[in-house]
Image 1 (spheres, rainbow, N blue to C red):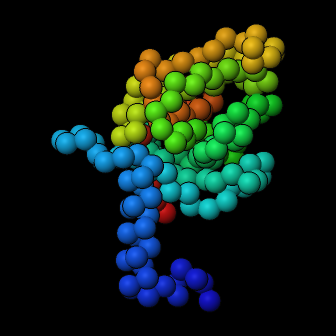
Image 2: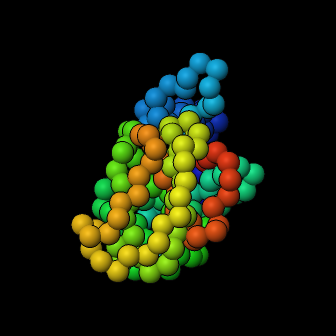
Length: 170
């Protein structure tokens, strides 16, 4: 029997309360009169070639993207190195445990990528297009957000939708 279907109503309520609590812990309380916080809820394991990562649905503006999620240090460092794009996904979402100022490089990434930065509520802070760099992290130019961010989304160059970020639980 499917374990999700086996949940009782009370168990489902407790599960939802737990997800809400985890979401609050990830992004803090929402600002008064501000947008609702963005919470990453993985919908399951990612497919090859991203085995070991999680996948999720995100909405950017009015477009839904299925993305692979890089939410720990090793995953964020690896990113899309050695890949032309995030196929079979529409992009890679980098999730940080708190506000970050970390820069991105294109060392080892063979094709240009768009990069957008979002705060903990999903508000877009800025975006840019990054050119490939055949050198090392230390020698390649760094790409930075205009201010601290919580999420960064990479897509193939020209594929980044305009607008703010929302995550969609499945």
